[in-house]
Image 1 (tube, rainbow, N blue to C red):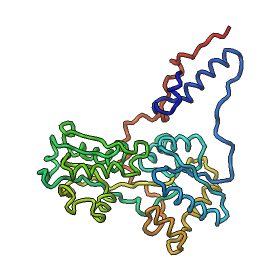
Image 2 (cartoon, rainbow, N blue to C red):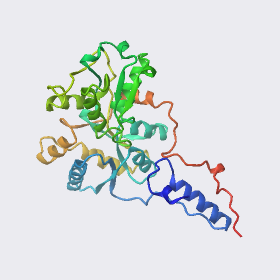
Image 3 (cartoon, helix red, strand yellow):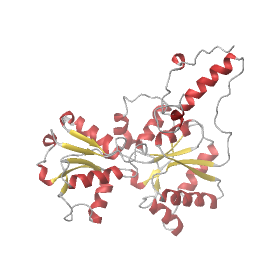
Image 4 (cartoon, one colour):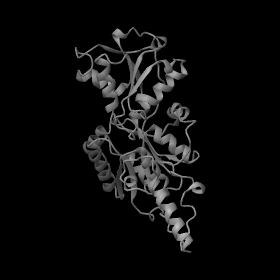
Length: 335
């Protein structure tokens, strides 16, 4: 185990697994019972996990915290830099609820054999739309025209800018293997939440470096309204109207079935009492992109993501560096 293994620069190394296995071998050989890191003792506070993808995240969830505290509920939040870590924290009992995107939500369902609870979502999370955008001068008017073209995708773990539109092309028989595909991995681990990859896709399309790209309707409309897309800035872009990537659901709150019933009840009741007519509530809701209200969970919009992840191994993140039976420190003699 080298110092570089512990500096955070190697995301595939499960440091805790390595150290735990090493210490287990040492103390086992000496006849000492190994110490195990368990979840923290139960707390009365509702602990929420959310992804730190923009500076205003702190403002949003501080506002939500104030809303809960005013209702007499002890509530706090923890920021994560990746959805994978957030899912593991939820499964390990370190947080009560996770504000998950579609990929993290489906993975949570898989890891809990479908027993996880879904507590609510924003009104804008239903019917999320993504597009295949093309250069007008690229000669693309059908899906068949995409063969051998240059394709720009966002971050490769982005549902809207990579995973789902790529799956759609494959389902329609588009020979993706003939295309030159470039991934703009600008926020890997955050599942495209920053939209930086989508911005790069539109910019590079306008420069003529690609023929087609994946962009969510949210970012496409923002680009048009701000004048950053078209408006004489580079080549003209347009949505390939014949490409109908199925709409899907985006973020929602996940919890384990073992959550304290009182915490679940308080969380749901107070969440749905947020009132758009109230100035303080409206400010927070607008920052979170809500048009009118929080809504109850609808599972139908996650089917395409479930299909996309069906063949994915159902394992913790990151996977252990070694299997227990193959670990080089499985047996260690101490003289």
